[in-house]
Image (cartoon, rainbow, N blue to C red; front, side, top):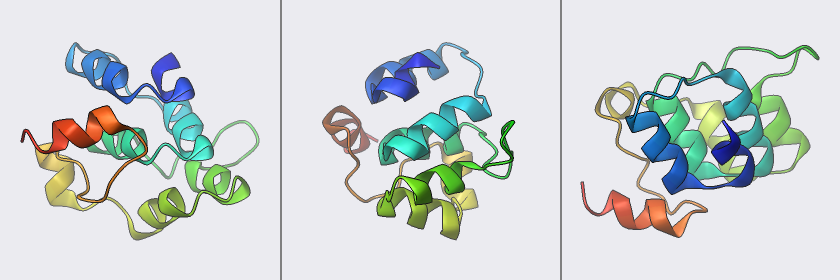
Length: 106
């Protein structure tokens, strides 16, 4: 998903709401670039953080390599099951002001 690669959280959310497929590549890109809000969104929509790519790396591996501490913390602690079911974001501020504003609308 190109929106995850470029940090366009609002676009990613709209695409997912309209049925875009959640895949591991989007999670790898979001995690490796430190896009906390998008990472949370993808996890909430069913992205599997335990999957590996052709280099045998997980999203956590990419976040660690890129020194993206908030995403590392999110992936290490796991995404709370309740939030995954409801699709609600983590209450921390994300890297995307549009997603931050949308969180307050829930």
